[in-house]
Length: 114
Image (cartoon, rainbow, N blue to C red; front, side):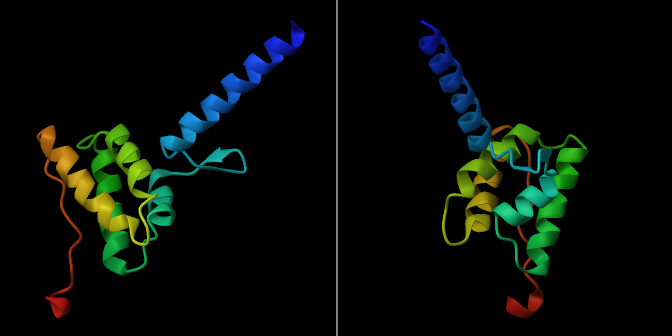
C-alpha cells in the first residue's frame, strides 16, 4: 500500500512538471526566467528587428494590453517548430490575438530588404 501511495505521488509530480514545461515556463537554477529572456532564447531571436519585436510583445504584456497566458501558450506551441519558431510564433500570436479583438504588430523588416 505504501508503494502505491509513493507511485501516485511520483506520477502527480511528473504530471505537474510536464504541464509546466508545456506552458513554456522555463527555470534556470530554481529561478523563473523573465518573459523577454524566455522568448528570445526559446524562439531563437537573431536579428535586431526580432529582439525589437519581442520587446514590443513583452511591453504589451506588461501594460496588460495582451494576456500573458496567450503569449506563453503560443510560445509553447511555436518553440517546437523548426528551424525558425519565431515566424510561427509571430503569425499564431497575431491570429489568436485578433480573435479576442487585439491587434498585435508584426516584425518590422528594414526598408533595405523591402
